[in-house]
Image (cartoon, rainbow, N blue to C red):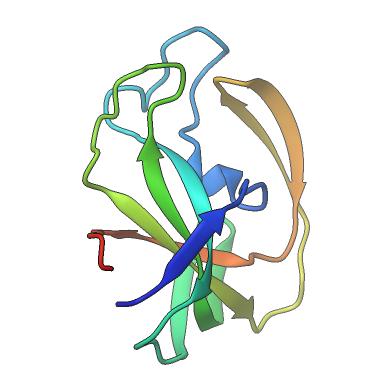
Length: 135
């Protein structure tokens, strides 16, 4: 796969790429095995054909169109913490859900504190991926 990336702060998918923990400065259920990720916008790629997928998550079942790769997310050490699985990367794909938009309100706890979030239509599907440099 050939692609180029540039740094990008991924706000739309924080629930996908930041492990959910209990409270700030307290250990959480994911601390031993979940990576933190820094995501880069993909602006060039090859060998990808759009496709349809059926997805089920905590909000329900959906039929989605996977459009194109949007972000490459590398495992990152935040504040010099260890990276549990440095070999596991994410590639996030732009998706279009064919159902009506819905709003869901959730309470999340992570290392940045506790937030109530109102979420709508999904935008990304992130897949665990391997990565190697090609030049």
